[in-house]
Amino acid sequence: MGLLRVFFCRLCFVLLIGFTACESSNSVKNERTSDPVSDAEMIATMQAQIDLGLAQKSAWRKHWSEKIGNFDASFFDLVFTDSIDAMEMPEKNPILEGDPLFPYQIPHPEGNGTMDIYSYKVEAQESLDHPFLNPDSEVIWYRLDGMRERLLFMGPSGMFEDGLWLTSQDFLVLGYLQEEAGFRPMVWLIDLETHRFSQFRMNQALVDYPQESYLDAKLKSVDLASDGF
Image (tube, rainbow, N blue to C red; front, top):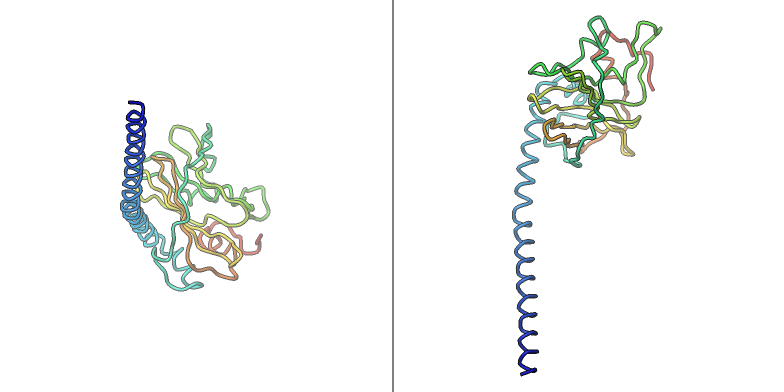
């Protein structure tokens, strides 16, 4: 009787291990078959958004195309997707009508405030003899309710050069990063509903790039020509 009990226990153990292994194997198979498809669909959707942004921001595309060659969204690879630590705080938009940077604010399509990608980067107050560029960059959303959200931040290794609303919840930012290979065009897609962003990098880079060149061409009311970094 004791031997029969031992045999029965061992049989149950073997069956349990086999069932667990099959379940784990099926789980791995499901992941392997579903993840690449869903990832590819997600990337295709985001690349369509990038193409839409490049079409609307033709000046930025032309600016870089003249230096690096013609390109579209297929030249950009997804680097990562991450959550946004928005650093929300009460603050009304300080860039008012009459400020040199006021024409370059990017109003929300449904009136929920404005997006600002230049005021942290560009010092252009009336008290200054000449505007200059700070080493760091920010993307700030000044919401209609009087709150300020910092959505993106970048140090001296790059710059946010332009941006636009794709929808009332999707914002696209264009710019570059300086790497060992050179200056590389970048795209950031921000989803304000989920508070997540995706970073894309171009598969080509420039060895040399005048860092203030795009802002100097775009910000007509701010002369940055004589100053660099």
